[in-house]
Image (cartoon, rainbow, N blue to C red; front, side, top):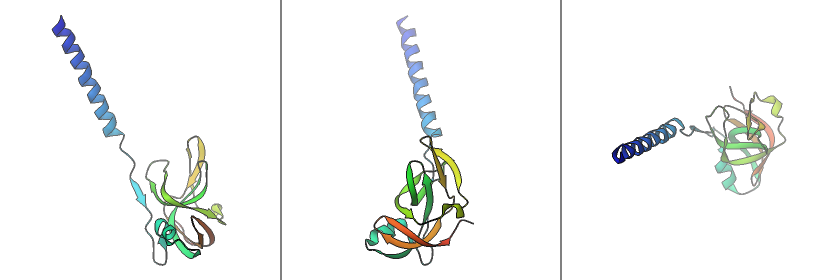
Length: 139
């Protein structure tokens, strides 16, 4: 009787370990897509590290919503509804309707984003860019 109980407990534990391993295998983190700076532009991290006010072309992924103001992100996840991966710049003076933005929700809030990097030319001040011109948009 004791032996049967021990086998029952061991079977239950083995099953639990298998469930945990299956969950970890199936719940892999989404791939991160980094925005590559093009000719005449900087990545978001490089632009922020400059640390001085100036005009600059910056390449990144544009995100709007999700409880945040408009942001230009250094990278994004490749999930169905991606997440902005920082660092990021707050974006001012940009008409978001000129972009073909995808729609989803994040934390039950509406979120829009571009699937490919964009390059914006603007006045950089700390972690904010005031856009003068859109240099490139997703194809």
